[in-house]
Length: 273
Image (tube, rainbow, N blue to C red):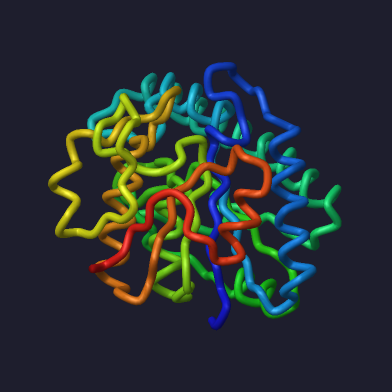
């Protein structure tokens, strides 16, 4: 689709990951109003939004090892505990999504949540089947589809969690966005993390090995791998879609999301070469 951008609102940005079930409502309000302002200036812009689970889903997911799934030899008692945790993570992810959707509604943005748990089947931690017709139809009608990190049933593991990046990996190969924007707390990738004195302007598959060991993990509980996992996934994606660029930047500063959506280079760019 022409003029299509994928935007992730990171869990560390929209929640306090050090305080369970704590949304950052002022940040959400600012982000949604920046999106509304950009849409008003460019009504042809197509945006697919994803958001992380932050301090809602990750705590329960770690407690119940939800992402890892069940082994075939799991005892019945362990299975019962796993599925209890699976439903708890679903509840937490859904609770945060409701807060996010309320923020979009308050900013007068026509948006609808597309729940991964009800539409995606995974196979060993990756999307196996997903009818994306509703996402494409929403975009064609001017409605902003919103996906989010969520539990899904898995043909190998029984159940698992797919992060927003996992979902974007599948959707990008099918829908071919122009750009992917990952808005979090960190204002890019650093060659000397955690000192944060030397931010890297761009990363390619060829240059990644020089900084791989310095890329940090998440500052809070994160069962989906933190920064290093995100970077590796996005590098694999730009290798398969060379015309795609991915931007990692901080959405914390007022106006930064609006700048990124408008094409300004903030943070670190991940590209094929």
